[in-house]
Amino acid sequence: MLRQKCKLTHLDVLNIPLDEHGNVSVGCNQQWYGKKIQQWSGCGPTVATTMMMYINRQSFSSKQVALQHMNDMFDYITPGFRGVHTLNLFTQGLKRKVSVEVKMLNIQSKPKTDFESIVNFIYEGLSLNRPVAFLNLHNGFQDSLESWHWVLIVGIYYKDEFPMIEFVDNGEMKKMDLSAWYMMNRKRAGMLYLSN
Image (cartoon, rainbow, N blue to C red; front, top):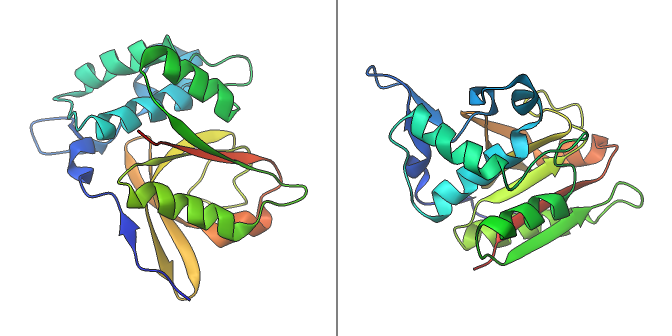
């Protein structure tokens, strides 16, 4: 049975003005960081900043204002040599900054986590109007998704019989066939959302 589309209801809060011509970034962009190491490894704190923008319904008036918040978040969710490569690293850092309850789903590659539990988790978070942070260490050969990377899921719908996710990644709205990623994924992954 196919489910209805489920999407966050206030996505406009994520639009960050870039110039006087109406160009916007959808959420924050890790390339805005000032240091190369931050640009390379800063997807975790970038996604956390965008997630908190949405949760707090806090629009940023400019890239510069967004970067101040990103730098602040980087001090709490600080990538190590392997980036922010686990749900626990992300969650521990976020909890040092704000008082939150986090619901997590660890996705295993061997044995594979049941696909329906992944789809259910996404629907669960989005139906509460909570963005779902998604860590993948292998992109499953999906062009729209980088490996070893955090993105923020904001919607899910079915195309034919396949669940498609809509996600924010470095200032852009993207989409991907979740089942194709699942079939080809070779490493662990994880998802989380704030439950309070």
